[in-house]
Image (cartoon, rainbow, N blue to C red; front, top):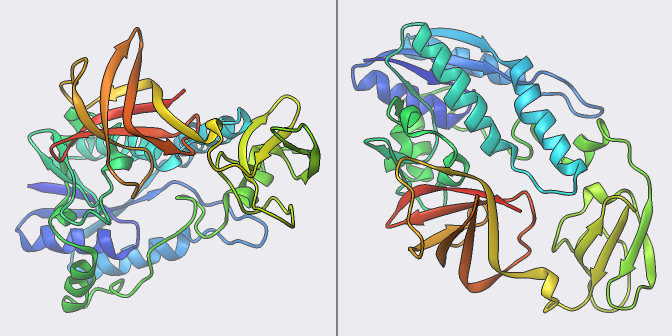
Length: 345
């Protein structure tokens, strides 16, 4: 088949391309140019990543192209993330990137250019349009893929879903791939090592505000801006002495952050989660079905029951879960199959 591989300049996508070449496919490497903006003290690594992807394409003897999605990426991923934080929510830009860019824009552009399938270096498996967990549970990335459509999955290959990360590194080394020893990228998906606070500070005007003891109403200190704090956060509060404080809420209008030393505070624990923007991959589960859910990447699978309430989905957890924030995604599984999920209200 004619397969277009999304090549990011990392080891995972490099080996993906190599495996598809070895399988006899007509492979074209594609670098998605999504973000090129430098930030103070941080150079965006896009040019280096592009060069690495090109080097691997040359090693493999495959065609190589660059698809420029920077405008759409800014609108659909970056602006979305900034708006969510402004509203006091905790979004996941990687999920939106997969929904709007990799498995929509990239897929459409690749098919229009003559591809029959696309492939990426995600750790996941696909079977007849169903999304299955990767063999390596520690690297499984289905949490980030739950908003991909069944139609897109039927046009997608995930060659790494059958391998663990260590084996991927070994296989890349065995083939002499240029990126075999390149470190995995960390931090925000599109700007590399910079932290979320440093990134948001470039786009959102913030003011200092009060940190308040939720139980007593006492003002305990000052913060740099409520936008930077998330439920359950402990570090970065600068409230010295005694027991550690945890963020249990915030008022975005009044720019106030509420904290407590009580780990059993009801604001920190959720037994029932209301989900909006629900997306199903193919058939949905039915009311009362038992399932497992994941509330964050690499989080444990939590036994749960689902119930439909109007346009929203209620997920009732078998055991309370700590620090689940509005804006987070909850992803639903049953027997190793990712059925979809939604966003916490």
